[in-house]
Length: 99
Image 1 (tube, rainbow, N blue to C red):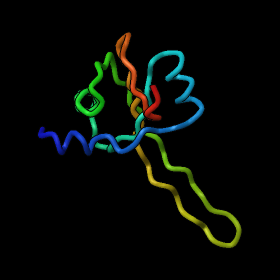
Image 2: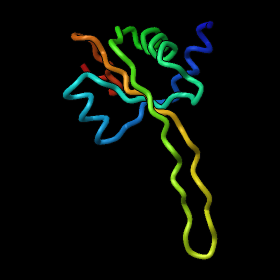
Image 3: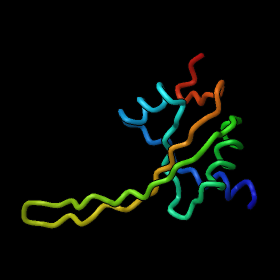
Image 4: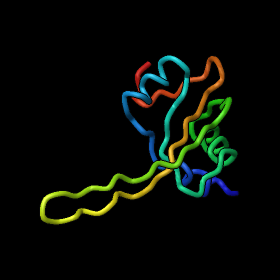
């Protein structure tokens, strides 16, 4: 797999209260990834993009919420895949750019 395909595996960091708690306590970062991404590809992409060492990767498929109400039905939101990446001790990803 070439580098451009690896960089497309990770769509965005998933910012939430649970993600912040995982980052503080367990050195785990949550990412939104492509639905066809696998654990080895996610690991390669994170190591190459952020220049860190990854200990493990956990993935889960998140079902889109059924939205709607009132007179019209809004329809379901899109399904997506979440990856929780555990970093090795001493490694860190800083999204804020502060030192």
